[in-house]
Length: 183
Image (cartoon, rainbow, N blue to C red; front, top):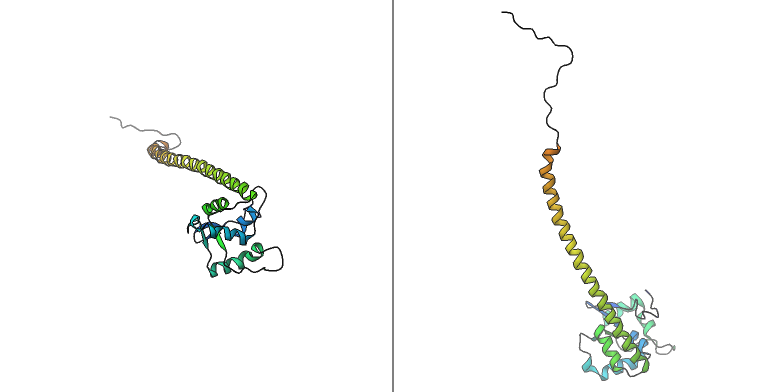
């Protein structure tokens, strides 16, 4: 899904090492700073970015991404010079993206920080709503299973009443005379 004004990270969230992450170039673009400056700010505030907030990709992971989505084209500067990245890209989890917004000082970064926090709150509310709906569906499913068992039991008890009684010997047709012995 291509990014839009309402959701600038649409289609940019990747799954790496079992975590949902965004490449360093994406928050840098959101915060209106070059990727290089963004990474410098992150390095200056390294204590705020533990391994579960941000990590640098391994060469194999970066190569895999490059072949899949042409990462360098998306993450490189606009000018022709320096189109190839010198260092391996960093990726940021949800918490890392919020923390990155807090270390950036530009006006756009502050605005995006507020946006990211609101988006995360909205997403959590939607997940909570989904959890309630899933719980209700599980209750309904449980009741349906219980009702199904009860209905089968009732059907088994009613089945003998629903089957017609066995037919007796068929009566012969016609006129029959019973002869009695005389005494």
